Length: 206
Image (tube, rainbow, N blue to C red; front, side, top):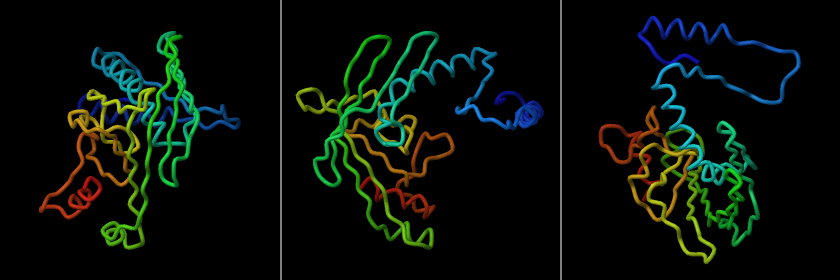
């Protein structure tokens, strides 16, 4: 993928990306992407991306139960996370464990996780069909079941973390697929009289 340069260079990069597409009779079982890190900015973005991945992938796995395990190989430093025990405390509340091995250092993370899915009139009006609002809330616990408040960690997720939400020091983490972040995933719109669409995000946080 080519993401830098002036308009003409970006257009040429887009053509190069399209021309690199290949179809194979036999699949490889994996989807892979290659990025050319040719500038300091590229390399810095890659480093920050790896740091963000390490800091937030456990929460992403929490909100995406389809992901059972991950492995990150950072130039020989191996990070693995595996989904552990799931204890159902009620129909909507679970206690979920993740087993983490970071370069041969093992630890366990525990989350208390609650999900709500209920009919929402505003979403139904907007999409012109019956829609539920989906909200997931979680807190991290220590081995004594005390709440761990990570002020450096994002507190708002739309399946993936929303950039900058670590500035909001909430005692819990909120995820909603019904959040609509801006194109850079740096903000969500709450209550704004200018745009009705923006007003519909406010009830998720109410």
